[in-house]
Each structure stands twice: as structure tokens, then as C-alpha cells.
Image (cartoon, rainbow, N blue to C red; front, side, top):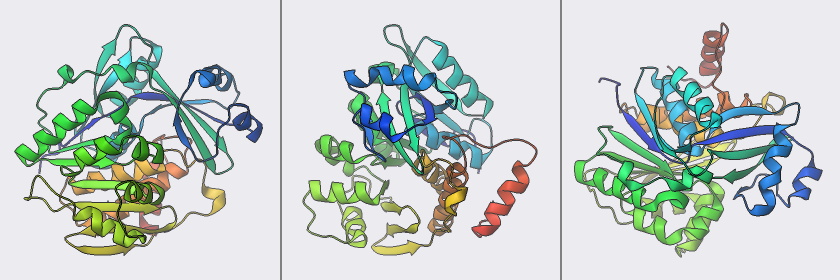
Length: 348
């Protein structure tokens, strides 16, 4: 199978401004550890404050962009993955485009004249992170920018519902009509609660749905599923109405170091994780995105689901040992990758 033009991602391109901070800073801005929220007016001074910290790091971000970069890293082939979103005409957009293009990801950014490129404050305290996203230009993506994509698989994180539900819905319908794969990630509990109606509208188009355990439980509660175990939730989600009967739905629920739950064709399976030691974990930000990027890279190539999950575990482990969604490079990369792949019993 040719690898060119396999995956298209659409989402909110954000420049992550990442820094280790004190709990006092979280309290100052009324933030919780391990939370993800949209910025309010009171949060705007936060971006300048952390940008001036000595340990600050600037990395391309946004959940979908992260996953697409990881998928391209695993697939390796140039132009195998394309990313679409809206940015401002500024330096931050240039930084993101330069890094993505250097990594081999094709970026197709719609440019907005009125707002700056979106940013996300990534506040790290010990092994926890708090995300505060200022979408800015990302919110101005317009459906007119979309064309009929050639990609075999289309992916969007639920974060993009804030910007352009119409665009995601159009892509979902197109996938069902053309038998392409439509994938989504639930992304965050607040999205599940605030955008329940939109998620339900999209649910019949899901070929692959991924989320962590808290997101899956929140969605089950919102739609009134009378089950409590994660295995039962996965099974019920897989049985929801489907527009394209040619594809069996795949449900993936991650649980950190606990076994990942997968439901396919009425069967639920558990996939063990090889957890890292606490001292090996640098930053939990983007680990979930990295998992799904690795999973999709194998799924689009038709690999068995257990191999897709193992690759997701592998890519998540790599990113957990970096600052932000930073793809490691350099002279030791091959040895580093092969050693970790051996630990996870994965053939790349």
C-alpha cells in the first residue's frame, strides 16, 4: 500500500507554551491539576507570565495536530499525513508550520487576518498538567476552506467542535458516503458535557472512537447509558446506530497505566500497558494524543487491533519522556526507539 495521503486531521492548531510551575500559580488563576479548559478573560495574563519563565518550551500543539505528527513519525513516508486548521498571520504560525514541515507533515493552514494564532498554556506540576487553551484564530476556521479529501482516514478531536461543528459533520458524512474511515477522540470531560448534542449527531458516523476513562464515563452518563463498568460502556457505544454498515465500529478507552479497553465486533478485550517508572515520566501532556496517533498509524495500514494498541502504548511512552509533544531526534534515536519497542514487544 502506498503511504502518501493516508491520513487527514482537522483541528485547532495551537502553539503550546509549556513550563513547570508552582501550585501557587495554579491557585492564582483558579486552575486544577490535570484539567483542560478554554481560557477566559481572567486567564489572558497567564500566557505572558509563563512565556517569561526560564524553563519555558514552545512546541506545536492542539490535540489533532499532535496525533497527526505522531502518526507521520510512525508511518515515516513524506506527505502520508496532512493537517488542516486556522492560524493567524504571525510568528507563532510560522514556528508551527516550520516544525511540522520539517517532520514531514503537510500543513494546510487557513490564515486569519483578524486574530493571532491560538496558544495553549501547559502548566506542569510534578507529573500532572493543566491545559488552558486560547483558541483565538483557530475558532475562525470556515467550512468553505474544505475540499473533498483524498485521504483514506479522517480524524478530528472533539476540541474542534468549539470552532466548526459544521466542518466535522461535513467530513463525517463524506466518509460514510465514500467508505472512508472517520475517527474522533472525546478529548475532555467539559466537551462531552457542553457538546453532548453535537457528539450525538456525529455518533452514527464514528468508525473509531477513542477517549480516556473519565471522558467515556462522562459521555455514558450524559447520554443515559444504564451501565457502570468501562467494558459495558465500550460495548454499548459500539452498538449505537451506524450510518456506514460496511465498517464495524472500534471503541478504545485508555486508562493510564491500567489495561486499555478495546471493543470491536461485539467483543471486549483488555490490552496490558508496560508502565514507566515515575522517574522516567517528564510530562503527561499529549500522551493521549500520542497514543491515538500511534494507533491510527497502524490502523490505517490494516494492522490487527492488538498491534494498533501496542503502537499507541509505544508512542505514548515516548512522549511521556519528552517535554510536550516533542518527537525525539538525533544520533541516539534509533537505539532509543528499538530499546523501547523491545520492551513493549512491538515490531516497527
